[in-house]
Image (tube, rainbow, N blue to C red):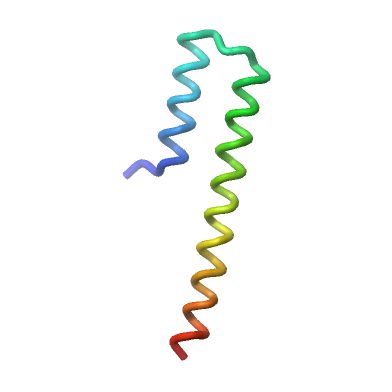
Length: 56
């Protein structure tokens, strides 16, 4: 199963190939996706830790 970040990165790659996006725009889009993924992973870890303590 493909993750949302993977699908988004693939779409960005397709757009940059097909439409000739300027490198700065493409890089900015990649950074945005990576930042969102980092935030989601961090929130998931915090939620997991919080649940672990709440359920004990």
